[in-house]
Each structure stands twice: as C-alpha cells, then as structure tokens.
Length: 360
Image (cartoon, rainbow, N blue to C red):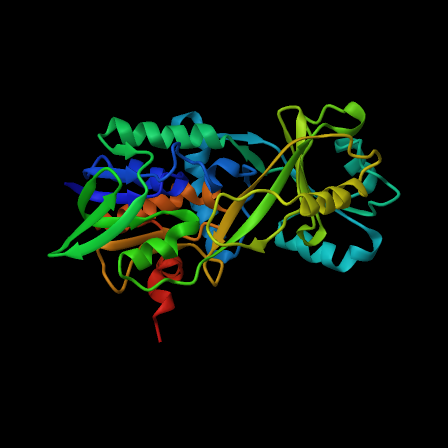
C-alpha cells in the first residue's frame, strides 16, 4: 500500500512525486510505455515570465529560482521578439505591453534575425530575459529525485477502475491493484475522465491541439543566437532548435483526449504566416508533431483537494504552462498535501483551488 498514488507520468505527476517522496510512500502510474509521452514530451520549451494570466504568472515567477539554480539550473538565454505588419499596429502595441517587450526598429530586428522580410515586417519589439528550458533535464532531475527517495514509477499501467472505501483508494490496472490514502490526478488531457472514474464530477477541462513543424532554416542561416519569434495575436511562433527552426501555427483546436497528430493543412497555414514575414521561402519540413494543451474553463491551473473528497487531489489544466510552472505547482501541491505552509499568497492559492468551481 502507498500513502499516495499519482495517476500521470508527465511533468506534473513526476514533479509532485519528487516533492512528496522524501515524506511519503509514492507510486506513479503512467498509461503509456514511456514517461512524458503526451504534452510533456511535445513542449516548445520556453520560459516567459509574462505568459498566461495573473495566476499563471505568479506560478512562473515562483518557479524561476528553482529553474535557474536547482541542480545547476535548466535555463539558457534565448530572448523573444515580436513581429508585426503595418496594419497590426494596435494589436502589436497591446501585446508588447502584455509581454513586457520593448519596441525596437525593424533594422535592429533584422540584425538579430537576418531572415526577416523588411517589406512585410513594420513593427518589432524585444525582451532579453526569455529563456529556453531544458525540459528533458528538468524532467529527469525530478524523476531522479523521486526515485532516489523510494518512489515507484510504473509505465504501461493504464488505470481501468477506481474505488474509494473506508478512507482508502483502490486503483486498478491490467496487472495490479494499488491502494493509497491520497489519489493525485495528474493525468493531463484525461483528468476529467479519471475524476469520473473515481466517482467525482468533472470540472470541464478541454484539451486543445497545438501543432509544430521542424524546418530547415531558409537561406542556410545559423539560427543558434536568434530569439523566439512571435507573430501578433499568436498567429505563429518560431524558435531555434538543434540547428533548425520549430514553427507553430499556434493552433488551438478542441479535441477529445488522444494521442494527437498535427493536421497538414493547419501546419501549412501556419508555415505560410511565418513565411510571409521572412525574406526566403520555407524549403523543407523535417518533422512535425502535435500535443494537447489542456485548460480549465478559466484557463488557470487547478491545484488542490477536491471539495467532494479531500483525499482526491487535482493537479491539472497546465495548458501551455506546464514546464515553466512545474517547480511552483509541485511545491504547492506537496505543501497542501503534507500540511506545510506555502510560500504562495492566499489569493493565488484560492484562484488555483478546485473549490472555485463549486463556490457560490
């Protein structure tokens, strides 16, 4: 028997396991044959402090020290640049303010990214303190921490039944029955389905597909020092990756929980939007993929005990913020479960709590 069973072996589940393992007997159940297979394995891997709503931003800020210093840190400098067309001036200025960018000349933008098409790009803005996240290293650090303190991590352990009786959870997979006092729902796009299996009301999460293409760099430029590039109203974004560029149409199509695949037409539309801002055409796509970014109705993470059963704990709705909020989100989850004082303020904790969906 475990003190805690965590359903989901992505960044949410594994980071919470790492926090709890020094204090509790923890078991993690992952349905797939490998950990971090779905959303966690398909992240664009950037840290932008001013990304998300105010509650998400509080988690970003609270995660920064850990991401910078723990185990030597997982951040490396990248920068961010927004590009706009002449007719996009109003929206451009709004997003410059939202993302904490500083307007620069198109000439300065072209010095940073020589591929820019000055005939199309008429507005540019930049901030230096945006970083790449080494998501694999962050995940492996948490996994090592969990296992070094005795956590059990089971892959190919799809949950088929959950019951609660006499203060204990029984979680059934094809091979085994697990028992625990606390059940943590960190199952990504499947969180509502797991809640229903456990006899609780779903909270109304929606998984949205986000597609990404990896392309060779038009014009054979070296993109290693280029910033993350973003279009106005997130019509596209691009980022250097292993000598190539990853480009996303920033799509947000609602889907049922599944192993998501990129839609060719959506990718083509996004690449076209990227291409028109560049001086050379896209030559070749080398790979593509898609992940599901799962949001609660208010697009804020859900972290806390269920009002229906306090032995059921939600850590869900990470949307596109999973890696950059993981350090603070997992610490909060651990503090709440263990009864420790949290460093996050009361308003943020209330805004994250699942109780917000039942409060009158």
